[in-house]
Length: 382
Image (cartoon, rainbow, N blue to C red; front, top):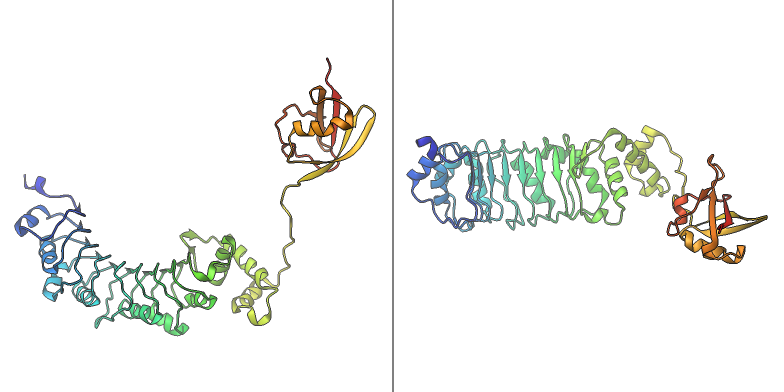
C-alpha cells in the first residue's frame, strides 16, 4: 500500500500557489522516490521553507525554483546543506542574490547545471570557493555588458563545458588569447545570441578557447549587414575548430566551401584590411581565381522564327505572356483571328517534332523556348 502512495520520480507543482512546506512528515512519506521537483512560479519567499521541502526529498537531483520571490530571503548555510544532492538547479527569475548563489555553490558538491536567467544581474560577484563540478551555466537575459564580469565566471567555474550568455548585451571580449585559454580551459560550447559583439576581432578571440567546438552567434550587430550565406561562411572560415554553428553541423565539405569563399571575399580588400585568417587559408588552398559571374535569372524574351504558309518572320516575344496573348500578338502578322489559329512550337534540339500549343492560359516560359526556336502558325480546319 505504501508504494502506491509514492509520487512519481518527476513531480511538477508549478503555479500551485505554494507558500510554505507544510507537513514535513507527509512530504517524506510521499516523495521518497522523487528525483525531479518543479516548484516554479509559486509564492515561496523563504529559503527556510524551501529547505524543509528539499530535506525531505532524499533522492532529489533536479530542482526548479524559477519565478519564486526569494530575493529578500537570506539562504543560511545550514539550510543550503539540505540541497547537497542536487545536480541541476534552476533559479531563473528568482532574483537570487550572488550571496545566495555562493552559499549554494559551497553546499552543493555535485552541482553540474545552474540556471540564473532573468535575474537582472549587471555584475558578477566572485565566489570565495571555485565550483569544480559545474559543467553548464545558463545565464541568459541579464545585463552583463562588460567582459570583466564574464571572466569571473571562468574563475568560479573552471570545469565549465557550456556557457549560455544569450540576450546579454556583451559588447566586446577584452582579454588576451593566453588569458582566455586559462579562464575557460574546458569550454566546449558558448551561446552569444543577441549579444552586442560588433567586431571580427571578438569572433577571432573565440579561437583561444582550447576545447571550443560549438558556437551560437545569431542576432549580433557585427553580422547585420551581411547576407545569411555570408554570415555563416565567414564565421565558419574564421572559426577553424568549430564543428557546430548556430545548431547546425559543419560538415567537411561546408568548411572547405566556406574557407574558399573567405579567400575570394577578401581578395580585393586593401592589404591593411585583410584578416590574418586570410593568409592562413591562402597557405592552405593557394590563391584562388574569382568565381565567374553567372546570371541565372530566366530570360524575359527570346527571338524566334514564326512560320506561316510560305512566310518566315523573325520576332522577339516575351516569355511571361500566355499562349492566348501570343495569338493576339500574331493576329496582324498572319491575318488570322485568334479562334482560327493553331500554334505549334518546335524546339530546335527536340527529336519529336512540333508540339501543339493548345492551352491558352499556359505561360510561354514553361515551354523552355530559346533563341532560334520556331513557332508554326496554321489555320484551324473547319
